[in-house]
Amino acid sequence: MAQREIELILTRQLASYLSVPVLIVDPKGDLVYFNESAEAILGRRFEETGTIRRGEWSALFRPTSQDGTPIPREEQPLFIATERRRPVYRSAWMRGLDGVNRHVEGIAFPLNGFGNRFLGAIGIFWEVE
Image (cartoon, rainbow, N blue to C red; front, side):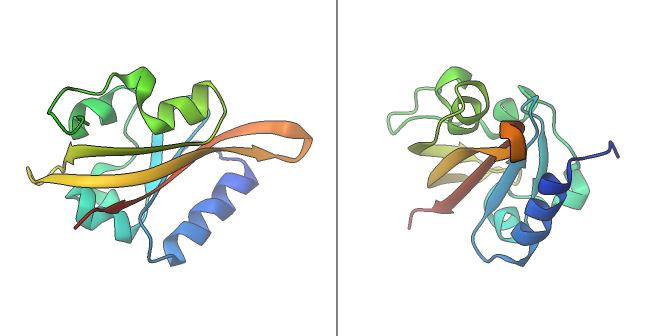
């Protein structure tokens, strides 16, 4: 496992104690962690997937709009949070790794450390019942 910034390590620790689904991406956009609450929506445990490279995880989860149109990577919340470094909200459909399509909503925001060091982004999401 690559060495991580202390803020990213602590964010992962916090996420592991939360009951809301959380995703964490590093500055490159690689999905480096998702908590147990996210596993039920994503359809697999983090221990089974490990880090998922940028571009691969959006292809795996296939986010689409309400009408089934694929959402381009440039319009996905974690991409916007890492590339444009601004918070964003979105509603979408996604296919979990268990093959189940789910309607989800969520927010993503950039994670900055002291000295305005860019550390990655956090996504918090939930399934719409």
